[in-house]
Image 1 (tube, helix red, strand yellow):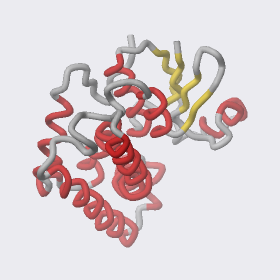
Image 2 (image 1 turned 90 degrees about the horizontal axis):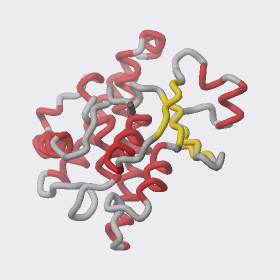
Image 3 (image 1 turned 135 degrees about the vertical axis):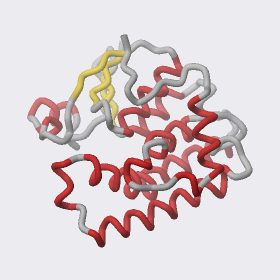
Length: 204
């Protein structure tokens, strides 16, 4: 059984939980709060020198960090990672987009909004920039989802899981998803899939 070191309300930590639920794979959870310094302790830094979660530890002792790397590894050989080379490359494209354009705007604005310890960093100029850039990222997604059910190829994949995590919580950061009907319909499709779990879900 693998162990997931994680923070429950983190979208990045939700991604592997969502995939593991769809794969029906058992796993254990170890909670670590990135907001109170727990990810910077010597014990956790020994597990992940980058001092972050999520982190997966496998039964043989090997460890893997970075949420999208975890998704790609766990999805290998499953229906959630396309076999077609181009569709697979599109998954990679969306995963890079998520970490470079989406998460640094939408997730960061949410974090500055909901975590009291971070609110002193939420200057008006920064919040305005994050809102502008986040809406641009949502617009990129909308351009695809206005005419397609899924982000990469013809089927639900880890690209959708990766972008779902922080997109479905974007309202907590002040983003109005009503302006993006393609995204809104896509979110509803994902939440209706068999095996879907919410961010509050934990393994038994």
